[in-house]
Length: 263
Image (cartoon, rainbow, N blue to C red; front, top):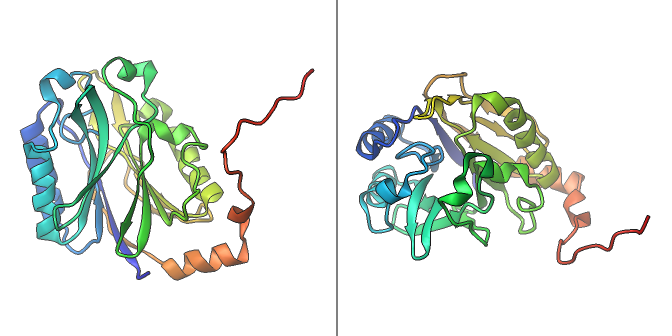
């Protein structure tokens, strides 16, 4: 493993305007070359919309094609979620696109019922870990952050990515849960959130942040502002920490449901 250059993209999203968001994302990305992985917010082409019938992307559509073009031009992986057509409806799909055009993806498991996401999208049923430049990278979307069993590091993951539209009203939870996932899984954790108000008037202040395996803050975007930041992840520090504190060897496998004691 070599050091990994990571570039989270905290950006404003224009409500249900795919072309405008794609152009905006492209300008931000191409102005900051040199990273190995770029990470965009959840549903970065539309905002967190419940109108997939009108705005859902296709795997052979312009949104994915633009991500392939960005990855090729930057010689980097480009990641972010899109509302996506599915054979049985629609999904909230986190794509991880490589420079050669390969597309890995994860469909959001935990749909945000408080916002009726479960009424418009189908939940995913499998996790996704990508191997890229020697790193094992796990993909999750927004509300998944609240469910530590689903996010458990059972596959020697080095870096976990959360892409989100996390509202300002509950941003304190985001600030707590991201480092918690880093500590319990002994891996780097990056959460990328949007800024600005969405079409429902819900405000987002960002708080995009990167934490190391001990929960230390390595990077934090300015509140409420667009920002593309770059940092380098140290694989040797991660390996040393795991050797010194080998907690993962004692983790539960979650292959069974434990019996409950009777009262």
